[in-house]
Amino acid sequence: MTVSFTFQGVAGTDISKEASDVILLNDDFNSIVNAIKWGRHIYHTILKFLQFQFTVCWVAVIVVIFGAAIVGVSKSLIYTSASFICSCLIKK
Image (cartoon, rainbow, N blue to C red):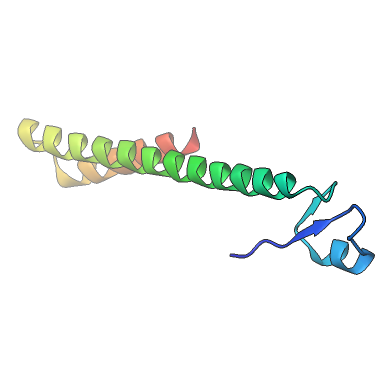
């Protein structure tokens, strides 16, 4: 995945503005650094959220399977309960 930057200030041309994904409003190097930091922060936040969701879903499935095995419930009810739990967690 690549992201292209363009300056809208003195160095930016119309062609480069149309071809770029992110347009920075000034020619300052700190703007580039801040944009890259912001993008990385968003990316890591999304990864943390997905890791949390998958962890919660798998733990819920494991709890349902072990709980049903201890109680002695049929396998079809276990699979239905596990899929219902995951679908409810993902919708939030």
